[in-house]
Amino acid sequence: MQKLERIAAARHDTKRGLDPRKTNAPNAVGNGSAVLEEVVKRAKGGVLTIGSNRFVGVGSLNVVFGAYNIITSNSFATIDRMIDILLDQDIAMEFECYDVGHLYVLDHHLSRKNVKRPLIVQFLTGILGGIPSEIDHLLYMKRTAERVFGPDVELFTHGTGTGNIKAAVQGALMGTHVRVGQEDNLFEFPGKPFASNAAQVEKMGRIFAEFGLEMATPKEARTVLGLSC
Image (tube, rainbow, N blue to C red; front, side, top):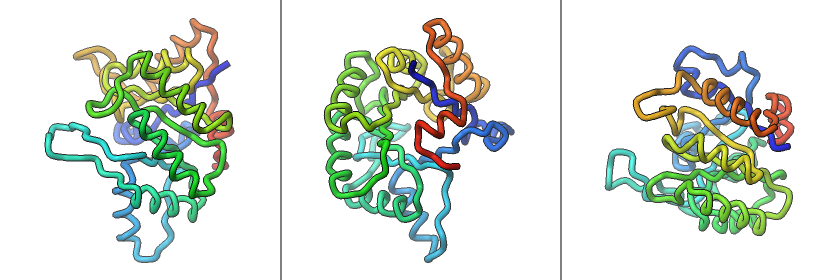
């Protein structure tokens, strides 16, 4: 049975007074390739330490967050640099793909790098400028990823906005893991915010129980993700 990675506390829950360390959940850190590059520039040769794994944004995107003149830039050189940094620090990577073309961008980089398996690929859908979260698009992403990367890959579906939960259910039913959380979705329904990341995970647990789908414990999630801490 497919299992849900139980990451019930992350950055937003930390701000709300919920300590991720008390949940024993894997601690994933995002913000994209360009941000990590800036961190490295400021490290001045010191040891770079990040959480148990790190998201790598694959490809640039015309994404609108309140501004029409901003492009989320992840050049090939920046992606290369980020992968090299994380390999050097032995930090696990999760690759965020916002459209089907990003799967082929990732394949290009993997052909030049010795990235540990299983490969962790997340479909980040529903952002204006990327692929929508409709089921036909999700299925196309899944089939393309399996064809390009082979069997040694762990796939996650992560729809954004209020379509997040619906996309997660569709992803689980077609055989992927899922990712939910307040980083990309604050509202359960229009005008009704989720109380926490944990509330989103708990809702997914109730839905999955109706389909006989099992949720992973933090320990099981670490095994799936190939994490040692």
